[in-house]
Image (cartoon, rainbow, N blue to C red; front, side, top):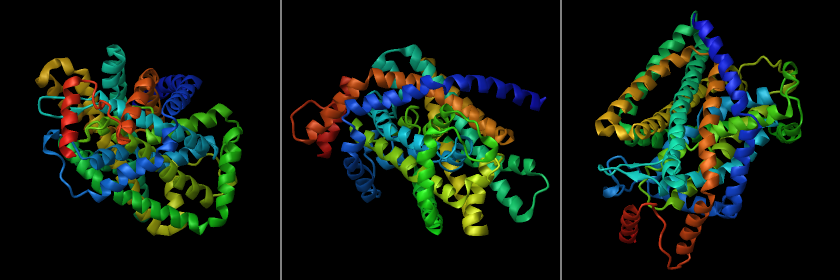
Length: 502
């Protein structure tokens, strides 16, 4: 019965996925990114130095400072907001997802990841700007924002805002499933190599239960606890992965030119990796690259802006610049390192086309570092995946709050509690689903979530440009009225806060 249900789900998802990730969504992603790039004068290039100088550098210097007392019980520092957002983007998609894209779309898919990320830098920037500009502050002083807020209050299409929130809810569940599936597959695979397992299915289920239990404790604590955990784990696991990747690439340095050659030469051909998977169309190469790129950095989904909107900063553009760095770090650094490590380690012509992404990811580390590599990978990937689970639980929670905003405070609390319980239970269930299906389902949910968000970004691109110009004009010393919030009362409050901060 269970196998029959999975087969039905697979068929339905394949049909929807073929529509969602067809040419219309690909064109919409690229068109939105191009339009926003033009209207912001290619800010991802012209202001890239500023995005580093005003975000990661000063924030790291001020990690010990306390956040402002008037930002609300559940507001977080800029770095905690960034860490939560990056923990939602830096996950299995950066390792297993990239390998999956190469196996099914060929090395040329990597180029399309880069292209989507280049435009995604300004797309993510724009999401953050609009998210902070249209975010709301409740009676407790908590700040909430996201795509559904700027669709409802900026575009003023409330029906589309509710659709966006529902898609976000589905995507959060799907993303959690992907991450848990990879945690259980990675850990059980490592244990099987070390001691041999008679029943990997049971081990995966036990792992799912453990992950659900630990995640539940953190999720109940809300954005403050999620932010603190993410701000501790993200720097550690990122630095560890980057170090291991550079060492592995250094061991095969002679293969690097060939790896780059494959990425560029195969981006416009029909051949995927492995003799058994020939015949993919040019559209498939683009779809795999674009889908994995969006899955990895989330630019265009309107997801990470939910975490950024809880930041204590009053300036939309300041938090927006975090979005530029976020996509750069996620795709151009982490995903590129994965791609080069994989392509320099393996001879693609020797692959059969039947390789599974998770097992190949483990093999990549094992080939370069032996049992030590398997051990390190078995730590890195679960940590990446676990923090992603935490971030997306918060995204889903905020989507539920928005959907039930008219149910009153008590109604919203009940709805959020029910969501958290279901979310945690589904963490366990997702360990039983096959790897390919869980990826496909979340690709579909991501595509659905992106559509209303991209429509709104295009419609409000002029406002993004206006807010951006306002900020940089003020930085140059021009006497112009700050554009900090769409709501006059909050705009005045935020202006006063900036004056007090000097």
